[in-house]
Length: 124
Image (cartoon, rainbow, N blue to C red; front, side, top):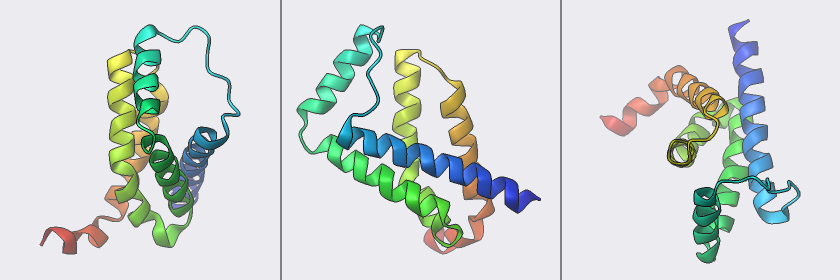
């Protein structure tokens, strides 16, 4: 039962990252009109750096795809930690919704704990 719950959580987590990455390329989700000025300023600054959004999008798509596959989940978790840290920092800075980033961080932490034996050679 635990493996099934973990798979569903990882599937949803991966799909959220794939969706976010694809949206950076195709802009199919509308930007909220009531976005705070700080958020608009931050996203405009990120858009001014021409290579940042495509790099982030490729990382999100690749990480999301790898996160869904159980064999590559440990690698995906390592790839997505810096992206998830950026998501958490931006949500704290902007004071926006915290529930989804916290749940996603919990899923990421769960995967890291479940795969801790795979990370031990990196720190020895």
